[in-house]
Length: 96
Image 1 (cartoon, rainbow, N blue to C red):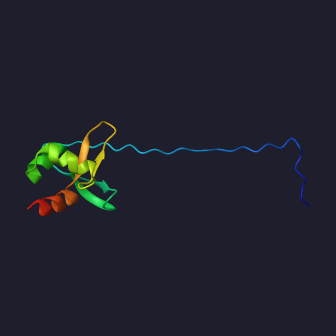
Image 2 (cartoon, helix red, strand yellow):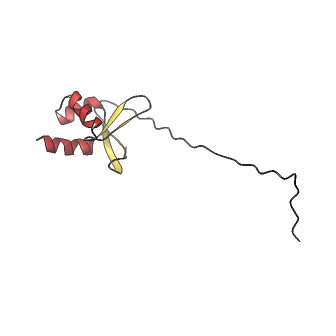
Image 3 (cartoon, rainbow, N blue to C red):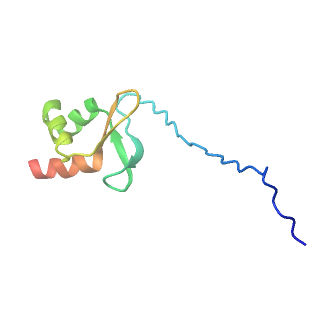
């Protein structure tokens, strides 16, 4: 009933790799919506200049908070920094 496999049989392993590219265009002070991994949800994301204007804090302080995980951010492959507005609101509340 069943045919016996011959000794010449070969196994073929096929591996695939998947990648995703996201293109974001920031126009003026418009916030974009993107996934914030630390928040675990979609959030409005601001560029550094917009975050400085929104929070009223100097860029150096915001960058320090990003480095200590006080403010969430993600860096695009192009090098642009996107800052989570939700975490920025919480930071503003603690500074007040």
